[in-house]
Amino acid sequence: MDRRVFIVAGALFTFLMALSARYGFHRDELYFLDCGRHLAASYVDQPIFSPLVARLALELFGVSLTALRLWPSLAAGGTVVLGGLLAREFGGGRLAQLLGALGVATAPALLGADHILDTTPFDLLAWTALAWVVVRIGRTGDTRLWIAAGAILGLGLTNKHSIAFFAVALVAGTVLSRGSALLTNRSFLIGAVIAAAFTVPDLWWQATHHWPTIGMTHALAQENGGLKNVVVFVFSQIFMAAPVLIGVWVAGLRFLWRSGNPLWRGLVWSYGLLFVFFAATTGSKPYYIAATYFFLIAAGAVALEHQWIAEPRRLRRLVGALAVSLAVTVCLTLPVLPARWIGWTASLDPVPTETVGWPELVHTVADVWHRLPAPQRDHAVIFTGNYGEAGAINELGRKDGLPEAVSGQNNVWYWGPGNPRATTVVAVVQGNPASGTSQFVTQLRSDFSDVVAVATLENRPGITNQEEGGHIYICTRLRHSWGSLWPSFKFYS
Image 1 (cartoon, rainbow, N blue to C red):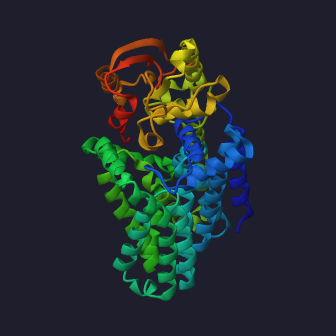
Image 2 (cartoon, rainbow, N blue to C red; image 1 turned 60 degrees about the vertical axis):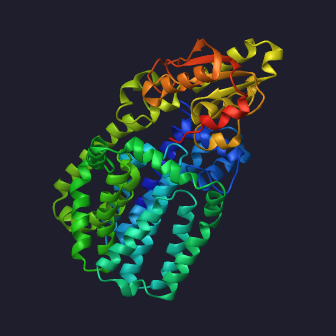
Image 3 (spheres, one colour; image 1 turned 30 degrees about the vertical axis):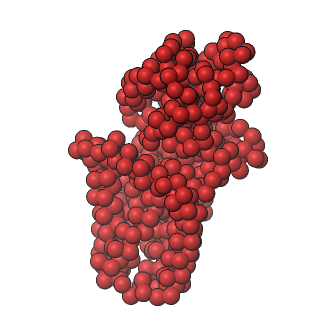
């Protein structure tokens, strides 16, 4: 292995960690911290792995942004190393291995995901690791490696269900490539059993909670369906890897197809099958197949390596364009600009804007809460419109003496309404109309006789995000008990 691959991986890890404390927590990170405090065998919107990592960070370091982001940064470094390993397995030399690693390290999909704790950093790592083992089996014919593939798949399934579709597409693609003989052996069966064993806790939790993830999937399909989102999905694939590398991963597709290797051809089939499937079912979730570009770039680097060696000027132009692409990507996806400048990036990548404003939200809620008379506070709950707001109050509001907030979104609903006999509800309502704000307020007005706005949500940089311009309401004179109203607030998104 070319040692420069490890230099690239280490540089990316160091860069991500250097930026880890800028801006603030992302809403999903706050949610995962909450999930980590409510450990379960699974959750509505993901299995246990990411909440378990959040819990580990809490136990080791407390509520720390840098400590929480250590783990996705490590995942990023590991994925970069796998990019180099993939190129080596495809038969590439030192240059192809370096370009395989650089292709992963500069991918907007990786940079946009791996600087926050979410399921995606570990999902990208798991997909790439599984692809690497499959490529190695294809090169060596050593089917005993299916056991390792099963373990990787199983671990990936404890983090996110989407890797199962990758596994199914790989199997289907291998069969279509006349490689069935590589799948009909004891090691493949053992690997499949190992992978299935990892899913038992998740399936048990789902079954005992009436399969909420199916409801969640249906809700996401309704949100993200339609021709417009299909077009967004297709167009966005240009930006999963650096756009200047389109020619490289297209060359990778051609290289794998012409290889005649059933497993390598199966990777091409898996890309095509997953492209069509996720475009039709998830619409605006283009990053679901982001990891496929990592093995395609590695294959393309191998296919073009000799041309680059023969024409170093061409290689220099590519590296220069890649550097420019990286600079633009970093400004759009990572917290390098002053926070007050990033409002314009929301339409391209909303992640940075959703890491701003949580301390101000918590301070505003605390001010409203502590202005309530003590007898009223004793019979009050804080109710938020989404899990990010609940997580911000629960993780950042402890020092302000705030009680645990509740929400109807996703898994937070399962943790209950707080005090079921509450007579006052302090409701936090976000400002983004597209997020169902008016519907939420309408529901509050139908359940309470008095709903009074008492504060407005603002963030210090003044950028537009989901919470900016929202309000805090004090809701009293319930028409039914708070506990009996709780089921009606459940929603998935």
